Image (cartoon, rainbow, N blue to C red; front, side):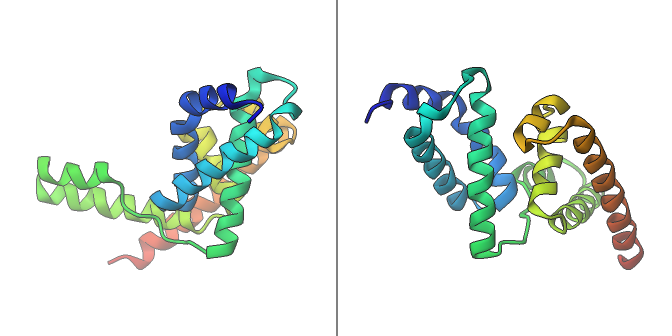
Length: 170
């Protein structure tokens, strides 16, 4: 393989972060691992097309996101699992506050799962990965203003969804 050392270096440097982003989209550990693997294979095959290695993580993220979207369309995954962090908190905290946390987490996950994959990725990059808007705009290949507008609309959509969930919940 022409770029074996470079791909190994990129894998060691970025695979965990790419996995986290992909996992957040597909919500399946094994599928996320497969997508990360496919991402680095595609990266190895197309490494010559990279013009700016300072933005290599965003390039890899875009490959991974596209692959994740493809797999979502193919398998139609929709459910978000409750994270291990919340499960582990159950042991340490009192039962009442833990139930409230789980209900809130579940409501948020319900609202997020209703989002289209592109919106979910945008929310993940901005709020969880805390990427600057300029970098997100580069990933989506759109102007920063468009990213701001989309974030605003997504936040509004999430608010409406959460209010509906609250009214339905006992």
